[in-house]
Image (cartoon, rainbow, N blue to C red; front, side):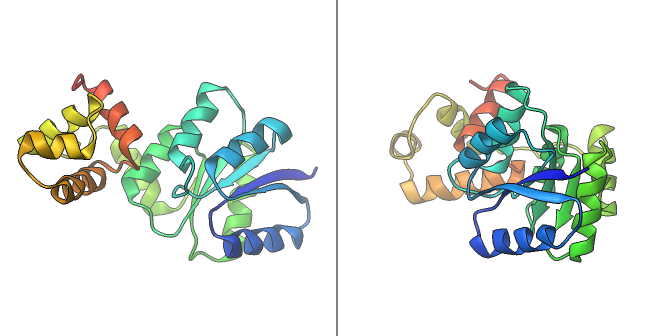
Length: 207
């Protein structure tokens, strides 16, 4: 049986390397190469691959947003996250959204091949430290980061649709300071942007 793959990464060299890797392995066919989440979504809708190999950090729809869209549209592609060093909370979120495998880009190529084969069989394939964190998160052993009162105010304003300039005017700070606060919030919560922060606020009744 030939496993049909979609590759999604915003670095052409990575895509070239992945395509060459699986071209030289028996039992694989790369049906699409994608440089962002929108392209990957279209490719999955068109080709219905067995496995999607996905980088989380991409322009025009990041990996986490793509996973949410796949779940919403009930597109049954099994997903392997291939990452250079994304924050572990993002990887835990990816697993919660249905990703079955997580592999570091620094890993040996054979490890990725083994992961893709396992995921295609419906198995979960996480490197040990990610598996431990996933278990901790699933059991509620890792507390959610706490935002400061100023950060909570900023989250509420973002959730109400205010732009950085408006937030700066209301808080009597500069736009640059707003951006620093937002960066710190994204980093603390493991979020990938404004849309993810809006979902976070909605889930916790901060809107």
